Image 1: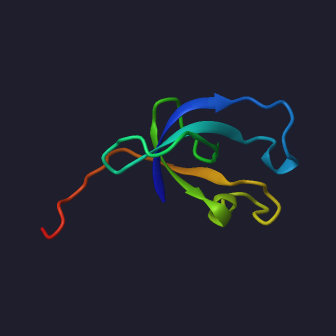
Image 2: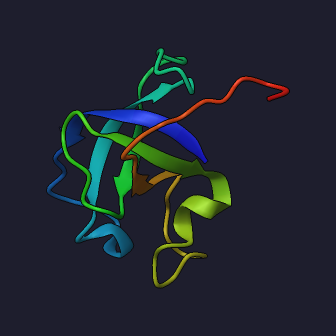
Length: 93
């Protein structure tokens, strides 16, 4: 899983039938310390995340697993959780 921040929403009037009721968010990938990591990507929101929230997202085949027909759903990235807190512990302690 990866961390990201929701920075926008994509509105589409026409979508693949498997994504008809899904919301597509624009997310900014983050490092574990909260710094930007690369450029923004789009992800299907499976948890109801809102603007400014930090989220977990998955990519590749795992991104389609939350959908009823994962083999037929065209998804490259999906938001699968909302982050409440991030704690990073020093190595070796």
